[in-house]
Image (cartoon, rainbow, N blue to C red; front, top):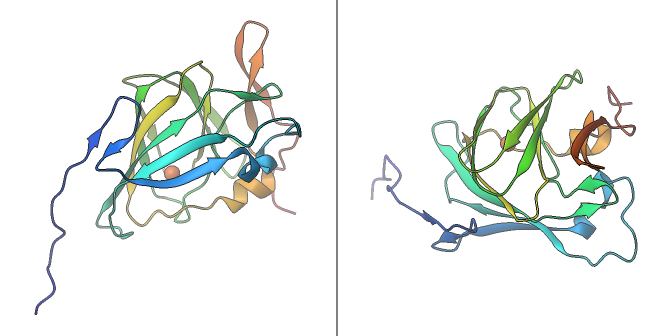
Length: 191
Ligand SMILES: [Fe+2]
């Protein structure tokens, strides 16, 4: 039989808490998976889920769009807010759009040269992430930060570069709210 030329159209409902119907949980990151991104994780902290990703099932090719929702729990490690691992796209020039669904947070962006930007995220924020910018989200509120993302289908994820070099800036809890500070662990270029 001849292979179908086009994908079958489909729909998914996003719940207020970011989960999808039908259920599409594809990834769960616990604190123990994320130790390397924080300055120090106290041994006394429970190994809780920091964020979950719910993805639509679409082939990873440039003709499609990948879409997912992320639910990032509130919390801190020391003064650093709970955050996602952060990544460049493996294909560097691939872009992405975020839509805030609930909660409060910051979208941190950085180029490989160390240039950086911050976008405040809340319900209704549409953030455009151009190609070349690594992106990481931090939950600065007391409720889960939930956002939807759509990106070019073959973008892929390069987590290693951010893990090796760190991110140039950090979102930390200040005396009167979130603050952005330089990351002392950041290395401008890989050794
Ligand atoms: Fe991305």
